[in-house]
Length: 352
Image 1 (tube, rainbow, N blue to C red):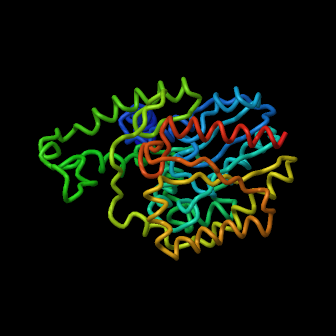
Image 2 (tube, helix red, strand yellow):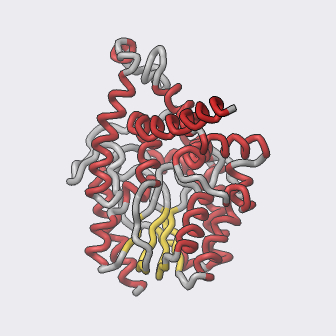
Image 3 (cartoon, one colour):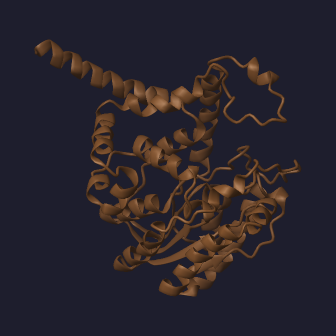
């Protein structure tokens, strides 16, 4: 029995040590989540809290916005974020003693529809943020992240043996033909066929090292595609994955009450909340508008916010972005970020 217990303790310690080491080899989004999770943020009073997904992370620069508005800002977006993640962090910040005058959250078709990004968010939440008992006790969180007893038990076990959290991540990164999961029919696959079987891991390590440095220096703003700090217009023709817009056709109705719940939590803590809609690239916006189901889903969320909270709670972006202002079809590059941050600073100054 003593030998077994000793072995178990060694296994647990080894798991935790290797988990921290192997995090540096994970794919981009997982690594960013782990870095955000490990941030040390002083508890105190802030003029503005910004929550949301990678559209916010690449579209708003907290340092530039703070300089232009003279506001003390806590910037905490995460890639693939969903409203339940925003809900979780908002409650958690208040529980720790944070105070906010204003809160800004972004919404889009991505965060209000049933799509693969939702599944990615659930996996990231369970594997790359701190263990939380609120996943068991809060009905909103339990219904999304755990749902049943078996998932709950597994979530608990992965906290003891964290290497289990990396299982799917490294299965994807070490393939017989690495980098092949996103092959397009018209793509030249010769470089992929000759890619080293462990090539993804070395690539990830180098990329994550650059990302870590960039995040710290830019206060967790991130140019999603190229880690640029200056405006470099994207002159490449943007190609949309076939059927990409179809992922946002099904409204996730259970998300609507949670979007509205954010306002209730903010009001209880003497904060004022605003919802911002950041546009996609023109080519993608056009594709979305061609599908009436997507228009209806987006309209349903906007109308729900207007009806329950007031039209003035929504900030629509007026800037006329070009496709050259985007790094890809959903994320602004530095050129677009400068425009959006400037416009947002003017709107926030009006709210003072």
